[in-house]
Image (cartoon, rainbow, N blue to C red; front, side, top):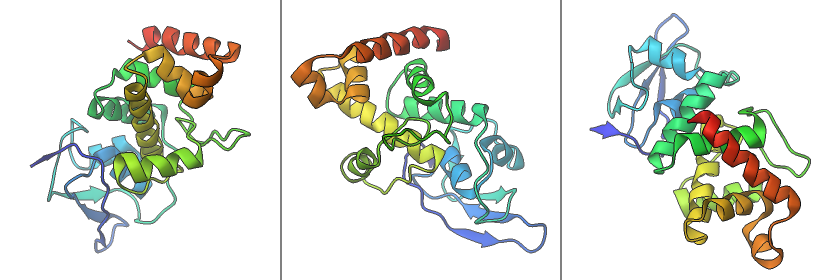
Length: 207
């Protein structure tokens, strides 16, 4: 069975010697999500298992994990983040260029970014938004400190706003930045208009 879903269910078993671990792929797993949780790069996990297409992983397969289970997650490389943005965009039916542009505007693809207001990670998701997305949009608990979950939360919320705005990309971006209730009540602030213009310009760069 080919798996492209979002839920991550972890079952680790230590292998004898070598400091590696085994992971059995469950329905709903994504390779990028597994890598983020186990503290290895997407590239390292794919290379260790001879996987050439990170979007194709079979349920029931046992993966070799080239790091000790439970080790602190290594910072995702820019290539890792790009791959996760592209994969998540595809699953939600979004242009990868659009999602990558939004993430670049928000954080420069840096999971370590924290805003003064409390927004977190690559997609600069507020904790309250993360809880809303977890409960009402994706049906599982998302950890915004993990790159894969952060991207999942941001793209799921973007898609939600897109539907609320009648599929208007500029209004969707304005809602992501300013808050849709505020946009509807007060219109776009000048800073919001600049934000929307910047993301749309970046989209062309990432095509």
